[in-house]
Amino acid sequence: MSKIVFFCIPAHGHTNPTLSVVHELIQRGHAVWYYSYTPFREKIERLGATFIACDDYDTEQKLTPKDAARIGKDLALSTRVLVDTTLALDDMVCQTMQELKPDCIVADSMAVWGKAIALKLGIPFVSSTTTFAFNQHSAKIMRQSIPQMLGMILSMPRINQNLKRLQDKGYPVRNILDILQNDNQTNTIVYTSPAFQPCAETFSDRYNFVGPSVRPVTEEIVKTREKLIYISMGTVVNNSLRFYRKCILAFADIEYQVILSVGNSIAVKDLGAIPDNITVKNFVDQIAVLHKADVFLSHCGMNSVNESLYYQVPLVMYPQTTEQAGVAARVAQLGAGIYLKKSTPHSIRTAVEQVLHTPSYRENAIAISEGFQQCSGAKGAAEQIIAQCKEQ
Image 1 (spheres, rainbow, N blue to C red):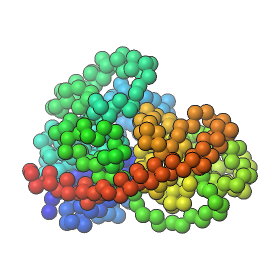
Image 2 (cartoon, rainbow, N blue to C red):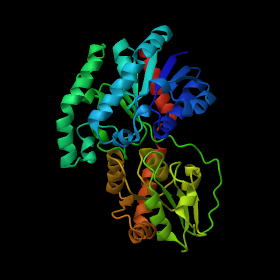
Image 3 (cartoon, rainbow, N blue to C red):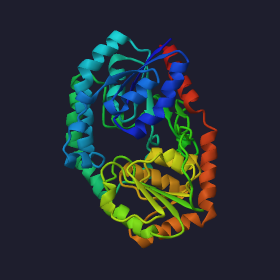
Image 4 (cartoon, helix red, strand yellow):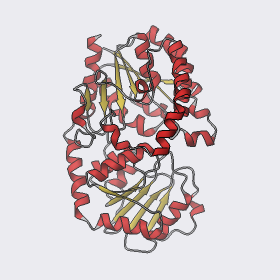
C-alpha cells in the first residue's frame, strides 16, 4: 500500500476531476490524504480519503472583494497570494509530511505549495492539471493584449521579490515559470484529450492526457421542447445580473426551452418576471442538463467546456478571464462553437440560433467527444501516480 497526498485549491473545477482518481487509488488499496477546504470535505471523505483542512492558511479567501476580482488578471498579486499561502502552510505541511513520509505528492497546477513542498522535501511529485498544459507552444493560444504584456513586465520586480521569499525558506524556485508551468521532466496528468490539447505533440511522454473526468448522469431533466438551451456563467465570475436579464429578453416566449443557472451571487427574484419557457435556478445539475441540451451558452471554464463537449453539446462562448479565453479559442479552432461578440438580446439569440442551425458545430463537438472517450481516464491517472510511488 502506498501513501499518497493530494493538494488542491478551493475550486470545484479543480477538485472534481481529481475525485475519480482518488476513488480509483483507494479501490486499489492505497491510502490518500487530501489537503483541501471545508466546502469539499464531505466529497473527499465520502471516498475514504483523509481530509486535512487548509482554510486557516489560504490567503486568497482573506482578500477584499476588490482584490479577489483582480486575482486572475494581476500576475504580481496572484504570485503574492500563492507565496503567502505556501509560506503559511510551510511549517504545518513540512511537519506532517516528515511524519507521514508519503510515497507521492499530487498537486493541482495552481496549488503551487504542493509542488514546492515536494521539491523542498524530495518527495516524488505528479502535477494535476485541470486546464490545458502550457509550454512555449501551447501558450500562444492564450495571447495577451499589449496592456497585459506591459503590465506583466512592470510587475516583474514585485514578482521576483515574492519568489525570493520562497527561496529564503529553502524552496528551489528559480523564476516565475517554475510556478506557472511544468517542464518536460515533470510527471503531469492533464484532464483532456491529446486532440483537444493545443500542441499536444510538443509535450514529453511524462504528460498523460487522460481525458476529462465526467461523472455519469444521476438526475433526470425533462426536455419540454424540441430544442433546449442551457446558460451558465459558472461558479466564480458569475455576478452578471444585467447579462442574465438580456438572456431572458433574448428567449422570452419563443419555441425554445431555456434553463438558466445564475449561481449564488444573484437572487432569482431580482431578475423580474420569468417567461414560461425559461427556468431560472441558482444551481442545477449541469451534467443532467447537458445530457439533454442542444447548445450551451458558457463562460468557457475548462470543466464546463469538457462536460459540454463530452455530451456532444456545441457552445456559444462568452469568456470572462484570460484562462477562459484560451479555452474558448481552442473550441473555436476546432469548430465546436462560436464567440458571443455582443451581449445584446439580439446578438445572444442570433449566436445561439447560428449554432443550433449549423450542423458542423455539433459534428465537431461529437468528434471531440469521441476523442475524450478513447482516453485512459481515472485508471490511467492512477497508474501514473502509482508508478511514481514504486520509483521511490
